[in-house]
Amino acid sequence: MEAIYALCVGVLTTCGFFLVLRGRTFTVVIGLTLLSYAVNLFLFASGRQKLDSAAVLGRSTEYSDPLPQALVLTAIVIGFAMTAFVVILAMRSRADQGNDHVDGQLPDPSQSGRISTSDKRNG
Image (cartoon, rainbow, N blue to C red):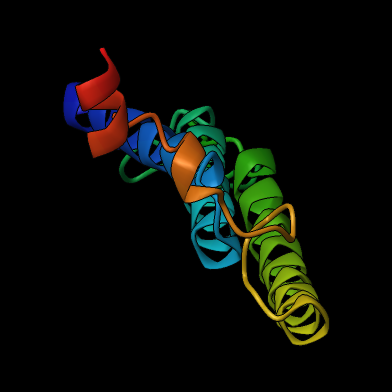
């Protein structure tokens, strides 16, 4: 079970980094959201959750740490607020600049790394 959990955190982190490095604002927002989910899962796993154990000291011999649960709950609220702010910022940037690229400039098709037909003929 721990391997599946670690694999899920790794996949979320990898997909989040991949989307953050893209050139459009919507994919960057989705990437940041995936990264925040990965961090929340990691924080939750650090609490060493146990079945049938109390989260309050003195109620049983074994207890689970309530601090990671509180951190994850706080991170969810802050992450939602920051996602809403970034979406509004991206919408404003799109309205002001006329495109949704992160740097505000359309990519140059001649610099895309592909060899054009004129380059093939010239050698």
